[in-house]
Image (cartoon, helix red, strand yellow):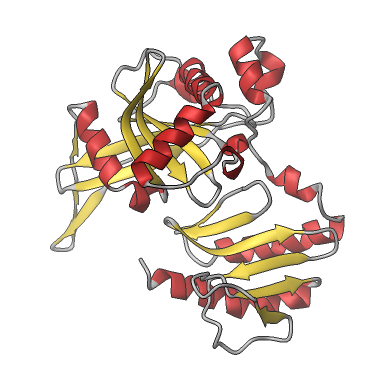
Length: 304
């Protein structure tokens, strides 16, 4: 992908620069972990049993640990290494919790962590076709991120999405480590959420989903265990929850705005920014609530 700079009515290609050292990328990412990934930094170079994790992070929204690895060598197996790190974590949960509490002066307990949403992120300047094809599974808790540095001090973090994702890693691998990890770690899909609702609510959601994503190219849909968060960069502006007979929304909005009949203020702590909730049961409700969703998006943009 070529990036251009507009200069006197013309387009000038911006040259890509090589990232010389893994440490350079690691330091830059760790210092901006919240901005890039919306994650809390825990520790650099966390070692256990002769394995070293480049960056240990915590997803405060999903209450899960995230492992980040930086690579220049293109010969590694993303699946084998990814599951080795996840197995290390699942077999040593107490060490990870202790590390978090000591570094963050927290009081995290084993039951406070959702281990099922654990994940490994590999960051590199580029990945081989073999590595990209290796993530073509619907339930792989591994992400590949290409990081490009340009000579105008611009940097791009771009997630490589699977080209196909219908097969399950459990069906094609007999590896014991992979088998053990997949018993506890789960990658949630829209189908998991659709199983909780009627066909009518599913159809309503697909209409709502399109309208939310159309708000801006910056809006990204995430799939959580129980909700579908929609974010602008690292901030969530709406949570969507599918129920059997309705769609429930929680929106990042002040509690002094004018509400449609299907919206209401939530009884929440003052520090909770998601103070407005709404329910959708029909297509007419979607058109009513879109004004709230747009307002939530606009209010969230002001915080960035």
